[in-house]
Length: 414
Image (cartoon, rainbow, N blue to C red; front, side, top):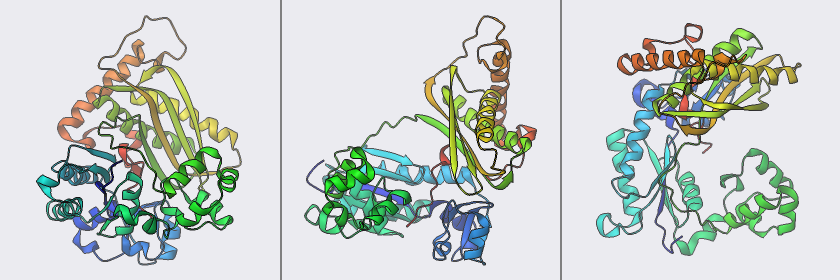
């Protein structure tokens, strides 16, 4: 890392909810939530009542009786997120996008073209507001970790610049929950030993942290507490997995519910993989029960797959394995599928007909290939006439599904 504060972290504010309020001006200034049975994202007006992403819709209504639920416009989220992050490209080639609504940029060496980093950050904010119509907060610091924290401090719709001489003074008064890698569970464990601020963590003996968090996690967090973060901007961030999740609210464990949700998710993931000529060998499912406890289960296949039907069937087997291991659970609130160990596969490699019992699930078999070709035909129809033009009848109307790249919600806790 250099000696100057040249790294920007740009983060669109309450992104999903802000887009909905932009698309429908009557929603501005009132508490709204994207979702239904489960809150996917909340506006700042809703957050003021304690409404948070991942919260059951019923609980959100209890906290905020006037809360309005709206359906998500995922194509618009992608379009507007792309447009906002693309503005950073006008100032530096060193841009690392880390989610649909946030990115890092290193503007070292561009001062002679665009001014100081703080001036660039302000210009980015002004252009995103004018060209995209959305609020964005930007943090500027010497390291990625501190820039990300600064953007959270800047929210909503603000700019925060941390000069090198004031780094620890700025950092040590902040709550540990702002640190990258400190979730609610770790935050609660740290609070149990009296560590609530980053400064208190920095002052805690190494042995105490290691005993609580383990050697690797404690060393990482101690380094970040002193703003030691050597990570550089990574401009070629290739996807290592493709996934989707469906918030179900509170549904009974029922084959039709499970099969319909998984087929819809597999359809989303498979179409995304095929569009990039990719296939994956490992299928992972996540099942979240009514009490929000989640269990994951995975299987690695002999051959990489991208066919919707194969993905759905493998995922369904995995989900029932999870449910068989938890017979006491009678309701589920979320299902998710992720496909990893991705590899490029521009054409389908056919196999000899060896009579495998699971021939329909082998992508290179005659039956497996026919499923893949049917998917490709559907992809072409959708490419010409839109996603809703054709689909699997069993999953029509799955409006609560969160497709493709939206597993990490744009909702932030600040």
